[in-house]
Image 1: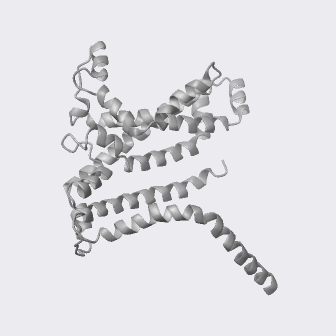
Image 2 (image 1 turned 30 degrees about the vertical axis):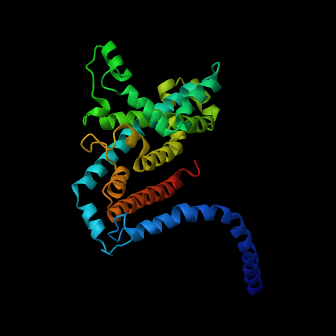
Image 3 (image 1 turned 90 degrees about the horizontal axis):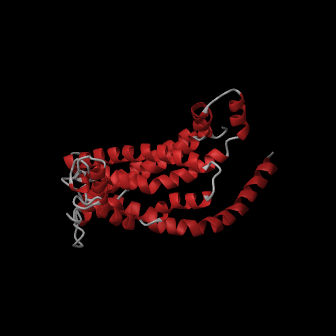
Length: 299
């Protein structure tokens, strides 16, 4: 028994250098661009550094207290939640609907798949610039369509009532192709004999969707829900181009609040505190995905 344990230990010692050899190329950029910035940000969150001078003082948890008790933080948190919910639900529903359409046999299916996925691979900045023209209050395509339909014009990105909705529309338009591709793969993995058996039993489209398709793609739905929520936490580009957090802070999310505190107000300590809160929320969501996804491992 002891000889077997000793041999296992020797085997493990031989494997460690090989593991380090293969993981080192990934660990170096991860350490430089992810682990070190997080640790540095955590350290800065306990200082009053103003980003402009080399002098700073340690202030303990004062930055966290200031941030978590400020109305701007909770307004940004509310906007982030609304933005996440407004992005997740239509992205999943429309993405699944498109996947069902593209899953059917049709001519030029590959071209349609490319067109649906192309917004995802297009830079967010370029997309946001185009949509800023669409959302122009005078002469914009969005209001022109409303005029044709006989509906009143909207302020879109110029109004605090519709600015967040405008950002959500742009984000959903960009991400539905991403979710559709995942749903296509998930639908292809569902055994076809389930649909055949359901057809023999007289099941229609909606019965198949509810009792076969939705349970079959539920792991993908959960994965996309978590990924979309994490993306909502770190959304910045479209907000910066379209609204700059306005009007009146109506589109200021946690990530944009971090930007404003650090690079507009030069309160790098408070900005770092917000960043650490974002990291904690992201880790919590990732941990939730890891724990809850186990129920579908043996699906």
